[in-house]
Structures are given as C-alpha cells and as structure tokens.
Image 1: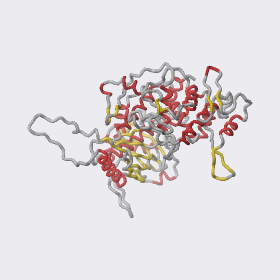
Image 2 (image 1 turned 90 degrees about the vertical axis):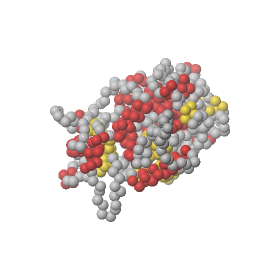
Image 3 (image 1 turned 120 degrees about the vertical axis):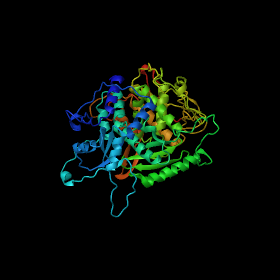
Image 4 (image 1 turned 30 degrees about the horizontal axis):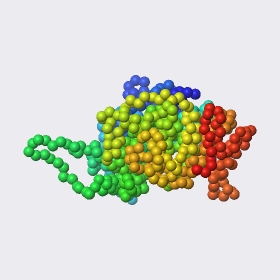
Length: 578
C-alpha cells in the first residue's frame, strides 16, 4: 500500500479520542454514546490529514491546556456519568479521560482556570488519625465516594486509555498479518508512539511541578523536552523536564535616560552552574516534601548536566528535571522538524529502534549500549545520504532560517528554520528499501575511521578513537555515542549484517501466511534461549537463529555471511573481520 495512504491511517489512528462533553441544553448524551474510540467500537476517519504546527506554537498550546487541567485519583468502580455530572457543576469541561496505573485516575481539562479555583475552594484537606497532612494545595485531587454502598457492587464503567507498550507477541501477530514491510513499519510506529492522552498527561505533570517552582520563581516555566515531545517518543519513555528561568522578565530591560533606575537585589554566586545546582537542590527538596505522588527523589547535582530525578507514581512516569539545558531544547525541536518532513522518517526510526531492542542492542539500563538517540541520528544520516535526499542536512536547514530563527547558545550555532519552508523530497523509495539500506549501509560502514555528522550529511574522519563517533549536531566537539564500547558496536554491526541477509530471503521478505513471522517480524523474534532448563539464558548463535527462521524453506541460494545482490546492481556484503 502506498506510503501516503498508510501515513494518513497512522496519523488518524495515532490521534486518540477523548470524551465529548454533553451540551448543557438540548440533546445531552453520555460520553459512551457519543465518543469515537480506538478499541473496535468505532473507527476514526482515516482520510483526515493534520498540518503540523511549529514546535513553539504546539508547546504554547499544550502548556495552556495543562494550566486548565487537573489530575484526580478515582474510586476503582467509578461511574462515568456521575463523575461527569459532579465535576461539570464546577465549570465547563473541555476534555477528560481515564487511565490506570497504581489506581484509577482521571485527567480533566476545564475550559478556564476559574473552574479549578472554584473546585479548590470546596475541596478539603484530609483529616488523618496517625499522620499529618502537609497542606499544599496542588491540582492533584482525590475523589472520595460518600456513598460507598451504591457502588460496592457496581462494575467499572469507564474506558481506560492505552498506557503501556503492546506485548511483543501481540505485535508479532499484527506484523505477521500485514501486507507489506512498509505496513509493518507504520504499524510499529502506530503501536509504539506516545498517544495524545499520554502527551497531555506529560504536560500536566510538568505543570504540577511548575506550581511548586513558581513559589520561588513566579514567572518560570517547566517544559518537557526529548522523546516526550520530539515525535519519536515511545509510550512509557521517561519524562525529561527543563526548568526555564530565561522567560523571567527584567533580565534585559533597557535603562531609562532619567536620573535613576531600579534593579532587584539578588543573591550572587560564582557561576551559572552553581546557580543551577542551588536552584535544583531547593526545587528537588520541595518536590520531595510537598508534591503528592512524587517519590524516590534523587539530586544528581554533580553530573555534567545537574538534574533531579524522581518518580511520579500517579502517571507512572520516571522524571528528570534539569535547568540551563537550552541546547537540549533545540535538539528536541530539530528532531520534531525532521519528523514532520516525511512520514517515512518516523516509521523508519521506530522500526529500527524496535529491532535494536529485540536484538539486545539497546537497553533501559545506562551503560555501554547504543542509545535510542544515537540510533535516531544514524537513521537521519542515512536519509540525508539517499539520492535524492529524503531530509536536508542541518546546515541546509540553517541556510533556510530567517532572522527570527537565529539562535546562538554559549557560542554554539543552533540556528535552523522553524516554519514549514522545507520542500518535500522527490525520493520515492519504499520503507522496505530504506530498512534494507540501513542494515547494508551500517553493516559496511567504516566505523574504525569515519564519524557520522548530520550537520554536513557526510562522513568525516574521527577526531578521536571512540569505537562509534556521532557528532553532536550543536556542540560539535562532543560525541553523543561516547559511551559505546567496541563489543557493543560489533554486536550492532553483526546484527545489521544478519538482518540484511534475512530480508533478502524469498520466504521471509513477503507474507506466506497470516501467522508465520516474515519481514520485520522475522527480525524481532527472540534471540535468547534457555540452557539446560535453568533460568540463565545465553545468546543463540547467529547461524542457529537463521537456521530456525529458514528450516521450513527449501533454499540454498546463499551462504550465511554473504549478501550477493545480483539483481539491480546491489552491493555485496561480507562479514569478515573488520
């Protein structure tokens, strides 16, 4: 199926739906009767196409929505109709949804902030017998049932939105039933991407933390960055937050020509880093002492980028709060722009990341593994090198920038175009071809000599001896993959060569049945097996894994270890030592 058709489906399906609030007069109806959902009850419009907003405009809209939103802990057998009727008595509800983590929660967006003020005025501080409640009035509420007998025998009547990653066996089943590898990659993107509701929840968590920081810095803002907002985030990924103090007024006020001028008396410290450490230490302590639902606070202040790490249990999110991290915000916006240039960009990134996790190339545990960010850089670099290119280089984006796009941070040029001036690529390669090229390109890449640079879109000689060198697009003297050791790089190269070979096999590059894994699904099969009935596992030899995939196929065209592409002039891949 054509990429454009599947992209329309992906965008429509990825746009999750909320409860439609009944009108106050005439034709009122409950949420369940009117709201289209994605659980099989009603299909969304697959032809709808949304024009991407600029990153700053979308951020501003999300922050404004979050300021009008509250989080509520609900009884497990809550009645949706009663819930809506009760809350709508305090103001007009724009949207709401339910989800489940350590309990049942509701996110409710009112049409104005005054409704939240009204709700706060009637809410009470809990009375505890053996503990004392800290009287911090946040926008995180607890809905108590004053008549528990009425609901004691009731069944839950609210739909919960998706809050966890699809299990691998279910994903394999969906991929095996797809019509093409292109469809498989778009399916992975659809199943793994952060949902609309989860995005709103992430901005709400940022807004709740901002309420605490605002006690000291009333004009500050807390902004999500990284995977949460760059369009490449996987549902369940950590929430990276940035305490932005640059928006505080008075920093660049011009002095008047009169006899006097006024300025604030402020505390002075030796450096901006010391100020950042002090600020995060205080905010972290306040989160620990006052923020309901925030646990496991860690102050990691001596890191290269000081941060406060904590768990927000109601949302199920692991959070990292930093300050003075403006370059990370620019990197986030850059990835957002790349994600909107061509639908194949996101689909290929999600597919490669999914493959890397299945192959044990990436991990949730910090260490010498290749990171998801490094993999994303590698995909972008490949797409820049296609003929014609699918996405422009960072230098080309800089050349398209206007005066208002100019951005220099600590002498680092972070300028690139921020609007929709980028012309679509004339490249017509399918995702299947691009996935094959990814494996072949990096299976043969001269990692021992060359580095990857998305600013220039071409290989450059490595300035240092790191096994994998991917230049930071803005802080160009830094290697974003400096953590990767030789062993992990060799694992990546070996897996890429094996996967390139597997995708060439007639029985695995197209669907033979609705149940047998093929294409991308064949690359995601578990590569670990039990040994001797013990719980300890070891990696199955590559030849055995390939043999398992091909044992039902009558083929002896090639020998594992070589890729002979006689058709179409494709290149030869050899797995000799490199």
